[in-house]
Image 1 (tube, rainbow, N blue to C red):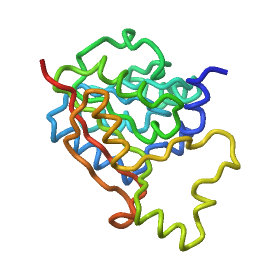
Image 2: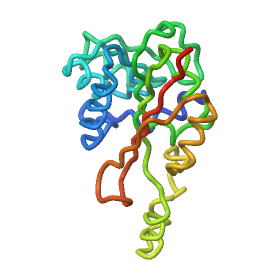
Image 3: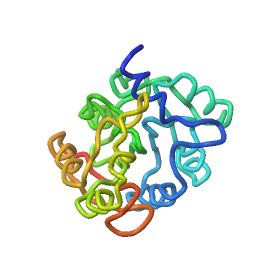
Length: 210
């Protein structure tokens, strides 16, 4: 089994259960509009539900995911959208290079063994000045303290399942990763639940211009 399969098979959901939660979708659509995006790549698209929302909102969207099952669901549900069986460790030239305005990747980076591969893949397909919109479960000091006091740390960080989350990101660590890979962080959004107890965070980062 390849790394691509291992890191994708647990998040693509089913035809009825998209892996991109509804509380993230509106933020992502707003962020795409804010940067005046036209052409969008959903990297780790799962069953294509977010691609469907992006397409309905008027964006020219392409989806890719290493899970053949996930892409199968996506193609059945949204036959008008191009989907590719392709992961972050693969050569992105099959979907072109440098012509996407935005790369969106929702709740994916916490699953991957080599997380630097994700912004590197995105950089190869983004136009200069294009944006990476990245979401992942939020972890921060206050949230971690609340989980500890309420005796929920073991449940949250459980290792008693196959697959699942293998990286736990804070705003600082994700910002550092993006900066070290040449992106400039331009925005942060906490999504879901209450401030500093957010379910997820959305990081917006820009590829440099020449």
